[in-house]
Amino acid sequence: MNRAKQLFKTFLSGRTSAGAVSQIVVSNFIIQGANILCGLVTARALGPKGRGELAAILLWPQFLAYLLTLGIPVSSVYNIKRNPHLASAFTAIALLASFILGLVAAAVGVIIIPHSLHTYSPQVIHLARWAVLTAPVALCGLTFAMQAQSAESFRRYNFFRFAPPLAILATLLVELKLGYLNPFNAALAYLLAGFPLAIWNFVWILRRFRPRFEGGMEPVRSLLSYGVRAWGADLLGTVANQVDRLLVVGMLAPAQMGLYVVSQSAAALLNVLSGSMMTVLLPKASERTTEEIVKLTGRAARITLIVMALAGFPLFILDSFALKLVYGQSFVAAAVVLRLLLIEGILDGTTAVLTQAFLAAGYPGTVTLLQVCGLSTAIPLLALLGPTFGLNGIGLAMLISTSFRLGFVLMSYKFRLKMPPPSLLLRKDDLSFLYKTGLFGAGKA
Image (tube, rainbow, N blue to C red):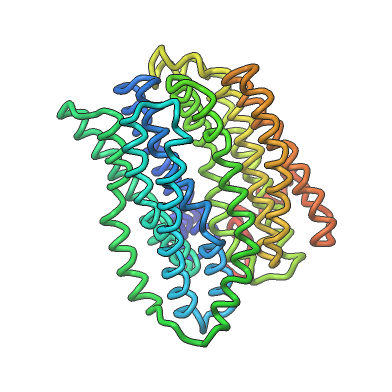
């Protein structure tokens, strides 16, 4: 009983690594649950074709925002932890840069969307061009969340993240009840639900960090130096995460796009743990030695791998039944690609956790190079297998590409960090250490 009370207090406080990760895991489950329910509502109401049109409308705003970060969000976390006395300056620079880059992303989207969505109706293309104008808010929202992460205010960070999908879900349910749910109104729900929260987040950051331009050019140089090197990883990571959808949009009909999006969303449930690990691992590990970073990262990766595998097994076995039960008979055709994406998701989550060691050790350029290696295999495989085997070919291409990327990451530990890669086999001491001291151990918590 005392142990249970202690764990509950740890969870509520969020001050230790274990408490922070526990809160983020719960938050991620809320987010994924809300996303799944949103997908369920839209899939059943719109069918494969309408779901594909909705995905096409929403694809570009977030993609372009993440594409043009210049690494500023992750750089602000690293630099604030390394130089807390300049937190106000780093915050001011990050906010201004994010807004300007968001405007650039919107301008780029307006130009390229008609060419990307040439297989869709003029109405879909028109709304997609309006939708991309929300890119500045999306990019600033990412920076807002990272500022909360840098302050290790994980309760607020979690609220920043799970409130928008809950608002989207509520809006979709209202539209469904009133009979107004169609691809265009659903897109508006997704795009506009986060605006009030973004304003509230901005006010909190003004009070917490009191951003102001000070320290001359040194904060700018520090933020951009790390950011531009990390940007390659952000840029290529964004492309790698979305390259399948980007190619599917121009390669497949809207109905097939709808099938792929549903299977991808179901497989994304496994991202709950890996995302939680990464959120806490980077700020915790950035303050440690290389040996400690590798040790922490290895433990996080092993736990991520085993938990994701256990969580994905039931969905892997019940794929057709689950798709029919949740989304309806018309989505059963996505069963095979769902299995492929589940395996790919497990490997991708483990790989993402392993790459945090290079960011924490101050080698963001290495992560960029690793993303180049992964992307250089993904695009040719998608171009080769997609047209030949359709949806299943796209899933197989992603699985093969992620397997290569995992291998590249493991090999890079020896070359860059001068240490052997951490083992991915779960150890007894991982479980006992987790039980006794929290996820990342004692010491700096």
